[in-house]
Length: 148
Image (cartoon, rainbow, N blue to C red; front, top):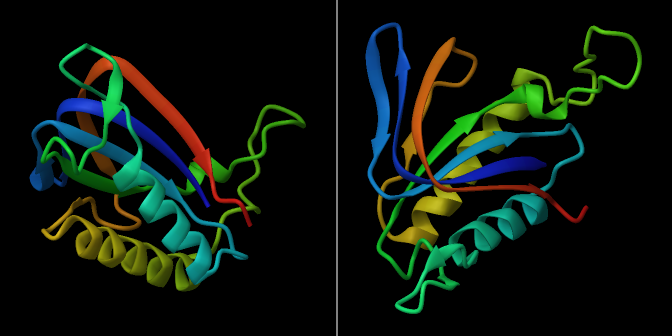
């Protein structure tokens, strides 16, 4: 599992002209799933995200988590995060989980985040052509890979 986490002032996802997810201050999470991902990977990543201290405290040090600031999460599936572009100019997506595997992983991941945050999490629509709009705060962007 690979995620790109962006600290945002605001973010939204639009599918066919409809906003499917929208947040204020918090984290935009682009999530890619591999066929070998397990429940342990999802749990590790969800806990890492909600506890990741990348928000400023009163001394302007990155010392607070999205939970600490009462921030929001917007999670967008993005299989291209598992692209392999080492050979040639056309990336291979063979490392990404196919939809029958990735959809349940995505849904479980969102459910875990909602449980940990204690409130709904914004989402895109799996497999759709999505337009993601964000105002990156910092900018702060971090790439995380699950330990498995």
